[in-house]
Amino acid sequence: MTPVPNDATDPTDKKPGDSYVQSFARGLAVVKVFNATRPAQTLSEVAQASGLTRAGARRILLTLEALGYVRSEGRLFRLTPRILDLGFSYLTSMPLWNLAEPFMEALVQQVHESSSASVLDGDDIVYVLRVPVRKVMSINLSIGSRLPAWCTSMGRVMLSALPDDELDAALRRADIRQHTRRTVTDIDTLRQRILDVRAQGWAIVDQELEEGMISIAAPIRNRAGQVIAAMNVSGQANRTSAAEMEATFLAPLLAAAQKISQMVVV
Image (tube, rainbow, N blue to C red; front, side, top):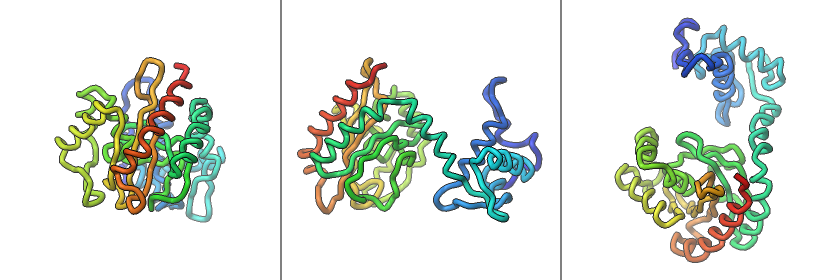
């Protein structure tokens, strides 16, 4: 992305209303340019990736540095561990996940496979809890990891709970592309699979995101019956087929999801 020539044409000027704090939005944009592939960046790189001017990016980086969220190493900037405080603020504000963890640990001990919980955020799922057994994906999954909702079992569970118009809009927005030879990319077929999930109450995805990885997921509901999250069991295709996973893991997964749903107070 080419840096904008001045603050007046900055793309973050598109604001929804008078309550929109532009400088805060720009600060978040700067934070989000740092990732596993680019953990340390120069001022120019940050400005280019965030779409800000060099002057604007510099002001934000120096502010974040003063607050302890960024540190500079010569010409390079990188995030500090203090940035985790922002994510943990969400987790600590949602005591459900502390209550859910024992049920997920019991599930993992029963099925001898990893289990995770996630919420829907835009077009992605975001991992909020993970109880691993062993590494099953080359993708490094941890709390805060994001994956596309449309080709994950937890994502399809949560997409299936959307009204039809919102589901259609989500599929139109999604970056639907081939991840493996099994990935469903035809939007009509994909929509029908999600509607099937809605009807049956659970989802299974067989090696659509990564070769060798199968995942089965169930919804976590609030007291009103609304889907607020999803949890899964993930396994390797060379050990367990999709049919075997359904036969062996689905019942204990649904039971664990039901127990967690009963812990939701609102």
